[in-house]
Amino acid sequence: MAKQRAKLVVGNWKMHGRLADNKVLLQAVSQGADALPEYVGVGVCVPCPYLPQAQALLNGGRVAWGVQDVSAHAQGAFTGEVAAAMAAEFGASYAIVGHSERRAYHLESAELVATKTQRALEAGLTPIVCVGETLVQREAGDTERVVGMQIDEVLAALSPDDTARIVVAYEPVWAIGTGKTASAEQAQAVHAFLRARLAAKSEAAAERVALLYGGSVKPDNAEHLFRQQDIDGGLIGGASLKHLDFLAICQAAVAANAVR
Ligand code: PEP
Image (cartoon, rainbow, N blue to C red; front, side, top):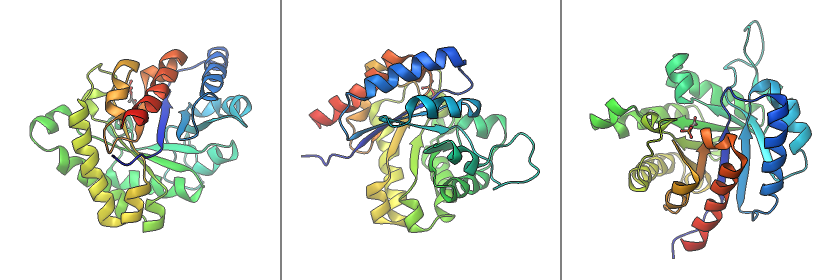
């Protein structure tokens, strides 16, 4: 029988939310997550101003919280930036780094993403390192070269022990917010490639690191994706803003483990 790994489902709220709406969403997610088995981890990455609210409403429950980016600097004259240690002060567990929207709109390089990964780890956060190819790159047969370069830059900056402390999210750019999902087979192929890249750095880390899939994951496609051998859960954008959808995706993680 295939080996069972713990599952992890993390929401990326992006720049969405208002205090009153967040309260309803966080309370519903927290309540629903209480019914999940231990082996399914749940998190939500909120806009920074809502960290105190997430902390107040989620503290002591099953749902961890985090941020969607951190500065590459520990502190200093960097107007508008948020240090990883600041997020940690509000009990954050996760920091997304290298999301394709940051790479595209803020021209973040693979090197910068590697530095942000280090800053997150230093602050005690778990970095969720996003990698993924554009449609043009996929169609040119460049997927492995692109995601390989993105992950290798991060791995080169980390010790084997620190490598075991990251989460990696494969998010094909063409599938984010578009309604187009990579097929489970396409996603599994890239996840297996990423697992092998991790193993080249450290076999132990490759076993431990959760590899999440992200890109238009919805309740109706999540289970099939999560059933794949190297898909350990999901990074969920749009569907994380609706508690019923997000919780249904968490339930898909339970169902996927049951049939593997
Ligand atoms: C994301 O932004 O990380 C994401 C996966 O978005 P969506 O689920 O909306 O495609």
